[in-house]
Image (cartoon, rainbow, N blue to C red; front, side, top):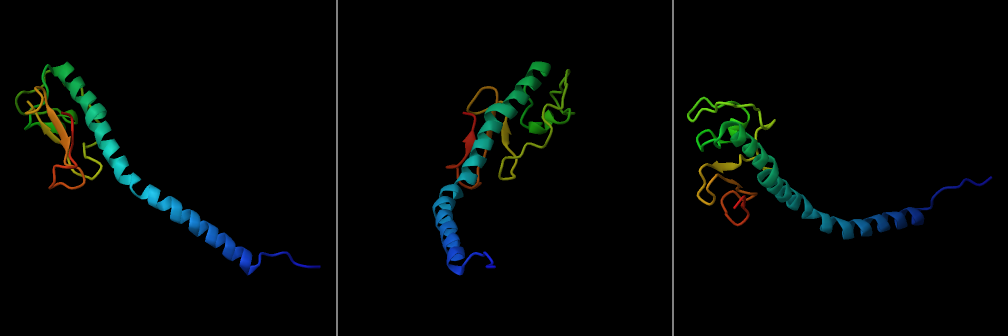
Length: 134
């Protein structure tokens, strides 16, 4: 009775095929994580945080001022202008961009009349990778 098993040549062939496939696929996926982070930041700025800010404004008649910041979406501000009809929290967690930095919020905005909202991106020092709502 002969035992059936893989030969060394067959095992080496499988390893070579897996290595070749990896060499073709990994370079294509390597830049995707950064693209995904940019997409998340854009979605936060254009949808999630924008919706929360609009709900805040609907309830209170004004957007939070710069000094109150996005923290006003999580806890009722105690500084002026105090929201009269605060029904938050409007967001569940602290608004951080995908790189772990706080979003930059200015109200009234310099680029828009209501508010400016942006992320400094991966390279905080450079404006080239900034993501914003204007």
